[in-house]
Image (cartoon, rainbow, N blue to C red; front, side, top):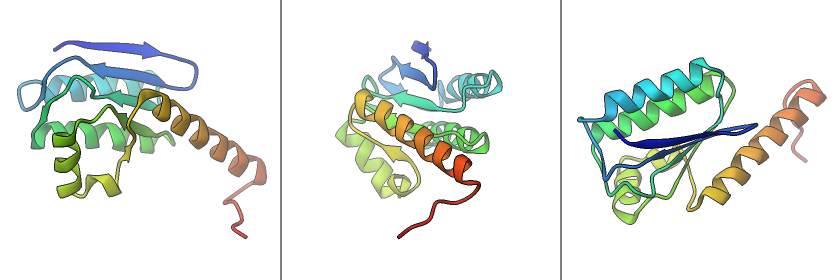
Length: 131
């Protein structure tokens, strides 16, 4: 499995450099996500711009990353999704569960916004008030 991993201050960018995220590589992808989370990387940007096809085990790997991030009060943002993969996620209703954006820049902004919201909540001592 080919991938790039760039650990930054508030997040890690994980770029999968494969055309297929399927049962052949999804166990290895899950393992990488688990290791990142174990090492304290709670915010993850998953770049799928090279991925052309995802099957159910690939979707499971993505959901594993989402669960790991949320379990540590972090966020998973998925970017670079092609039309075929986006349609599959919409059919599976994962677009209601996952944070999906078009570009890595938008993903970075989503992580920063999430971190700012958490800081505001922490400073206020609870949930933010909605007016």
